[in-house]
Length: 404
Image (cartoon, rainbow, N blue to C red; front, side, top):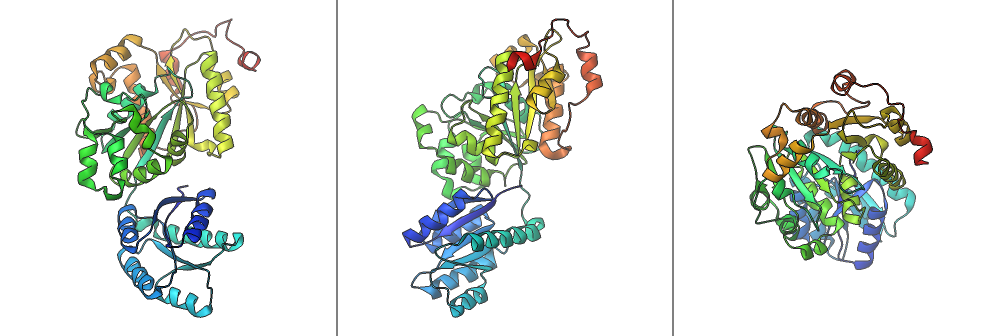
């Protein structure tokens, strides 16, 4: 379920801090931006299309009521919530007559705040069909280096036949430009710096064009630029980008820093990639435990095995038992093909689309683009059995004993 997105306008610092803290602490809500002026709020609402705005009343109530009328006319799918310390019946009635859907008395009370969120959620559900279609966001992640997530992310994005953005969120050491054979002049740093005025023209200039359906949002060109990118910037930028692309594929760094956690939280699906060796399986198990503690729904995490071959002596069923979920993708091992693709800067799904690796990646791209149902079990057992048929090795690792 997508979070309820908010923008806050408050000239009073105490009220702003109180409302922002309540929204940031609630798992159901996401704060897109905070505004100091009515003009900034109006612009941000049209640009970001939040589910709701919270406007605190100050001394000039007539000006605020005029803003609410403009918002309800220009953005009918955004719920307006008025907040004030004065909760007189006349003020509440005037706010609702102007177009506000809810009224919050400050300081906030837990039960009242929850009730308002419930009503806003109902409002969003009623208006969901009138919202512009939003693209899907797929994050490719591994907590262990060397598992091939950049190769997988690049090829999933390159396999798409509709507008797709590949975003390099390995902010310190991203190199997806080389995997696509591109020379980039702009990066996510430029997009973050100009996030308040992003439109189709700016997005098109900051995202490097690769093919008819694929563009790249490169990692910062200079390592120090990554320091200025905050988690809230990632959320705001992604919220705008998914209005322009059918699919956004995120290539993430291996550490669970705040930026990476925000990207994982925002994604519709997480592809957790591992290799079938003891360090890789242990790393995946740790990641799943962390995801559970953070509160990620287990259904959004999908386990992908990379570099699968018939020589691997780990029994797949025991891996699934240990990880507590099915493997939904098995990407075959072909070191030479993969390295040739990376060194030439040409996605394998384009240069050798009939290869076993490309066939499996294209299937995954179809599933996670939303054109097919989300996988619930390991796919295509028959095909995989024919590709990697073998007798169970007598020395197959007893995972539970070994790993535990």
